[in-house]
Amino acid sequence: MSSTPTEATKSWIQSIVIKLNLCPFAKQPFQSQTIRYVETSTTHTEEALAELHHELTVISEAADKDVETSLIILTGGWESFDEYLDLVELAQQLLLDLNLEGSIQIATFHPAYQFADLEMADVRNYTNRSPYPMIHLLRETSISRAVDSHPDVESIPIRNQELLLRLKIDHFIK
Figure 1 (spheres, rainbow, N blue to C red):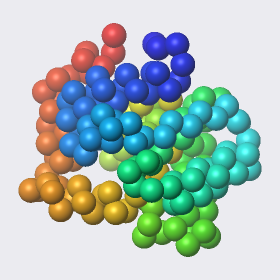
Figure 2: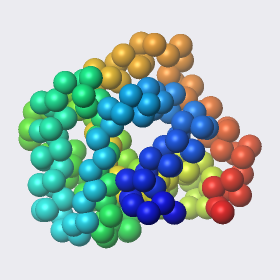
Figure 3: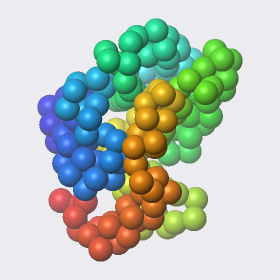
């Protein structure tokens, strides 16, 4: 693994997300360096929410050309997927409390990500598996532009699952 969580995350974005085209919208902000990477080692919910609050303020006040998206990389704790999901639920509530719903959206990534309808070992879970637990903040305007430019957004998850089934689990476990 790379020497820092941010380097590991950048490597994952480049070698998995972009290379496999799991998110056709990731390449542009990655190459233009408009992704903020924020590492936090806190294991306390209140501190994690305070850092999330700060990052929501940063992304909502920054110009699109400077910060298109933010990845909050949780480097301490949050290995339990259920505890992580509890944090994400509180993060969603914070988004509502700050009146940012409709401006910013939350996406989730975790090393033990598991879709509700899949077994843990199912390779399709790797569409959302990352080197560290992460909370991804996306601007709604960026999502709208991306959706408008893509011919068939609804096909992306299906295409990703089919691709991962063809690749098999060996591609991800090294």
